[in-house]
Amino acid sequence: MEPENRDSHGHRNNKTQNKKMKTLKTLTIAIAVSGLVSVTNLQASLAIDGDQFLAQSWGQRFRESDAGNFNRLEVFKVSGSDIEAPGFFNFSSGAWSTSGNAGSAQATGPTLTDVEFDIKWQDPKVTTVIDFYAWDGVTLRDSARGTWDAQTVVKYGWSFVNIPDGSLHTTPVPEPTTMIAGALLLLPFGASMLRTLRKNRAA
Image (cartoon, rainbow, N blue to C red; front, side, top):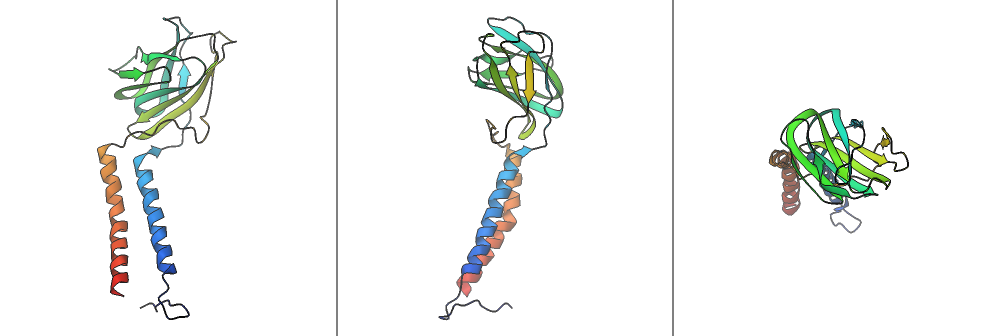
């Protein structure tokens, strides 16, 4: 049995106990957050597929592949031309539900590993920067920052780089199974904290 830690006046010193509880709380929060969104090591897999084309404004066909399974795609305007709603068009495979506005667009569909699609914008004469994401449920499978150089209106006028750290536009809503798994992970820490509190009251 560990000796009681008391101060110079004979009072119990709770600093050590408080430090332990703070450490448990921090660890619990970290586990809860990590259970909500899973981010893997990413290598941008988005690629253009053919020439730009005129729609009501203009568009580009893309291909997403080599990123593993995905079932949700997102694109966000960083700067430049507005997106032509709903943003995503003409998927090569599967039935996809699309929604969007001038600043962002989303498409959800079947779980795939390879698909082609169009994205459309309002003004081809404006240099445009976008952030693209491919999700598998709550796991981020792919991300890329694409730049359309309006001064290079030729095939392969796009360039792609990794999205800068701290620039993630959206956090997906956790699926019910993920929330349950997170809650189960927290049970041992909750029980440990309860035992600690009961021990303090009994002392």
